Amino acid sequence: MTDLRQGGIAILDFGSQYTQLIARRVREQGVFAEVFPCDADADKINTHQPGGYILSGGPASIYEPDAPQLPPFLLQTGKPIFGVCYGMQALTHALGGVVAPAQTREYGAVQIMHTGGDNPLFNGLQPEINVWMSHGDRIEQPPPGFIPLATSENSPYAAMGDPVRGYFGVQFHPEVRHTALGTQILRNFIFDVCACDSKWSPAAFIEDAVQAIRAKVGDGRVLLALSGGVDSAVAGALLHKAIGERLIAVFVNTGMLRLNEADQVVQVFRDEQHINLMAVDATEEFLDALRGVTEPEQKRKIIGKKFIDTFADQAKRLEAQYGDLKYLAQGTIYPDVIESAASSKKSRVIKSHHNVGGLPDDLQFELVEPLRDLFKDEVRAVGTTLGLPDSVVWRQPFPGPGLAVRCLGELTWDRLETLRHADSIFREELERLGLLRTGTAQSFAVLLPVKSVGVMGDNRTYEEVIALRSVTTDDFMTADWARLPYDLLARVSNRIVNEVRGVNRVVYDVTSKPPGTIEWE
Image (cartoon, rainbow, N blue to C red; front, side):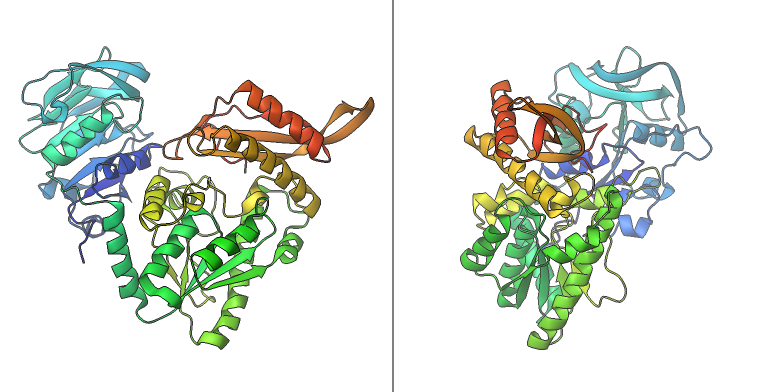
């Protein structure tokens, strides 16, 4: 079995909000990248013998007493190192250079000028490059052996390097789209400096994952938590390819799916994909467990526990039919892991995910998460390669807890139905204009926990408010609100207040991520 991780890029996270973008940009080049906390064990980081290391940015100042430092083992590996922003400052500090507060901070778009010459980092690039800066400290004196590679108005060492040792640093962020030629800079480091091989692809991943699943599972059976979303669907197709009928998919209808989705899941996976599917309607149980609960994190945790309880109950029934069941599969993907558990001491947990973090000790399953290392776009590519229909592969992301995180305030069947129908109208009108797949990355309705005064038929109304949310994004780590046509928004608003009972006002969310999240809860 080919180890797709062998000889890739290890990324050390110093707490930057952009760290995961670095991994994604590297993988776009066909090279595996994995993120580790900056203080992770050296043996763990070097398990797959990376071809080079990238050091992320971070919020700290290197001269502060508790600032994270460059792990000493990196300098002993003899492998290339590429520091980004704080990563460059950490490298500089460790090698005897000087980092100090800048008189003028640089945030946003900045133009740099690279020096040319023997400079593999900027090979093939124009002299002037627009980049994205985000720093208050700068390099005052580079370490011995380093030469300046680029400058900006406020940074004499906007980039620097020691080509002999393969050590490089940039003060800007090549991983963000705002740095016009950032991808090429990363490519130069990956291929020209590290000499990595491009072997990470959907087909290669499938081959590797199938073998890994078979090696782990053996002749055992696997339960799959099938939600009907892209992630669990692709996980199911991958598992089915690996172990066939020994996969048992359990679909739990929580009552919080979108309009007609419960029926669609059964049709696609049982009737079309011929997966061994058990459908369980647990709507009443979930609503009972959530009655009176309004706090978002509490909702997620209750739903997570209820999922576990439901699977435990179904497992007992299935064990009576099939014998011992040891494995539980989930469609966990990389962003789930990122947002649920900080990858370094300087990162922050944003929200919990019910399918991340393992299972309780009293639930005797071993987790199988074949997509845990993939970003959403990679999951879609794998699904297409596996032959899943576009209606499944390009289904817009839907949170594991379902409409529970889009129905703010208390959950009741009537409020869920209100949200379901409003959301259906929004998605129907977007689909009419071809905006569900190519024009937006995620679009949905939110039912707010407030009422507003309105007038309908000369009568005063006091009814609920629907918020519409639509974003564009490449990676779901950052996002911008979608500039939808006014005529579309007007049509959606008119239909919702006329067709959805109990709603008299519609608003549109124009918040980016950050500072907001894509979901409201």
